[in-house]
Length: 420
Image (cartoon, rainbow, N blue to C red):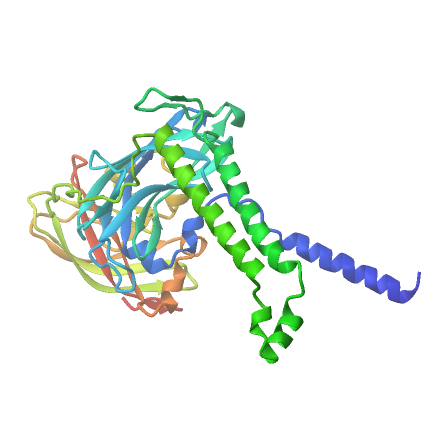
């Protein structure tokens, strides 16, 4: 073997290895990390999200419940939630969503005119379809803005894919064993018929020289040679055939299915949950992100306007829950079943951790330090045209009762120490 051949083979092997490395694997989870930080931190804040189980069999059900708040500091670059649709986020249809509710009202249709600064409760019932381990999220699709994904947890589906059946009985008593395959053969026949008609039309023109001869005929002023009377007859015959197929097909469908349910275009305007009492007034002062330290620090003034002794228990943003470990009620509220990857181990650190007395006003620095800012790809807010951040603050009294506040404002990067 010559040296040139050896080099060629080495190049072929190197390129092949590179291409194999570039082949994408199965998309497993964490698609929410592709969203811009200003969307994840300042649009929809999900909380109290719970998954009824971590493992189901094919055809078994899982229930996802929780609440979401539409943030007051909704970004200017994102379309407002004037038209939304509640859905689930998972890698393809591995689970079938059977029921959806917003504030206990069925959410089969889209919803309009949701209110900023207010809370909504949701519930989704899904059924296992494809065996595997899947990351399951609630998701709110906002018209003009796209999907806004909530926190996710791993759900394992066991069993056999072939056992999945979606059986229904129509209003006329027709029993369908599996809607996934019902009518597929009929659709395929229609598609094959249309492909055949299209192929006949193309072959009719491809049977003779196309480009150069037709161009020469046009240059010589003989456009009459381009389309003959036979071409006209074939075109008319094909048009008549298509119209006949459409008319006969429509009549046959009308006969077989006299009552049809049209696609639903209506929308529903849900009422938000009752407004929660405001225990603490939050006034944003300053925020910074310590780039080398991977630390988000927010300075804010807190005024306790209630008659309760209140402590700061949690700062939640972009699906992450920074919990004040000095607050037992806050730790209890998280629960042992919540996804560990969404609860940073360092938690929330306060420079003045003492509870707020009734009527007290105090400036407090919230320190949320963790590699999760990098892992969740949330630090690109430093390069956005609108460098702002935001999140929810959970306040607790001694009995475990809770009030929710918002904090938001511009953020600056720092590379050494703190400027707060």
